[in-house]
Amino acid sequence: MMKVEYGRYIIEVFSYRSGGKWRPDVRLSRRSGDDVHTEQLVAPEGASLDSPAESDAYGVQLAKGVIDERG
Image (cartoon, rainbow, N blue to C red; front, side):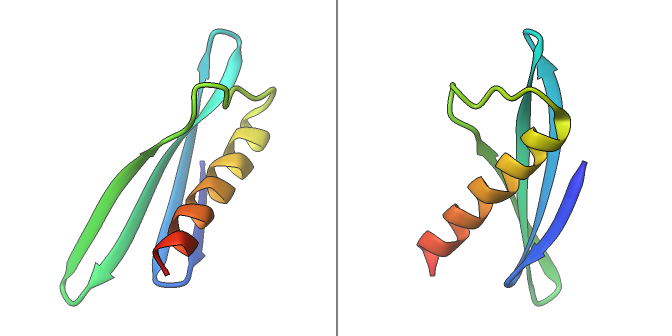
């Protein structure tokens, strides 16, 4: 599991094994006043990596890209 703060967001990546490879399960959370808004990102089909560390790093980069696109 990897947890990273990026801008106003908290990125959490929970990697899991699928078919002998590792895939990222990514959650983005953002606080707005007293509320916390959380959403799950789905990694592309081909995002199957060799280790949990690689999967975590991929998930963080995926989330940062989504956050940057939003501005």
